Length: 86
Image 1 (tube, rainbow, N blue to C red):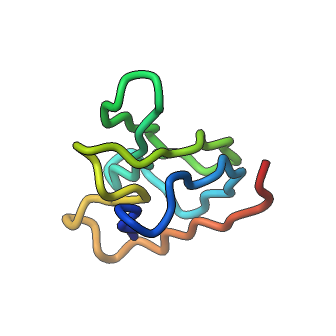
Image 2 (cartoon, rainbow, N blue to C red; image 1 turned 90 degrees about the horizontal axis):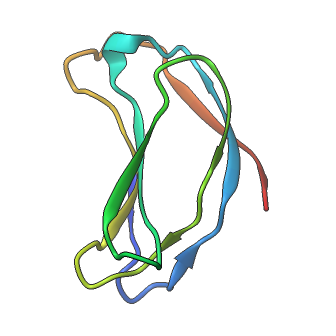
């Protein structure tokens, strides 16, 4: 799931998420951009647990932020729940 942030907002706030059903082969990541360098960064979410994800900012080179998983593992019961925002 990706959100196009170009023109919609300038920031996606930091959030705490709970991941279940993840396995190393699922290659689940959260893609985001930080203000300081305008580069794409990723956080790997390849194990069940709770994660604090950083805020993402609009930049000229990145118009999408969000989660992506490898399409080679369609039979997984992968879930990402947003627990709270910071």
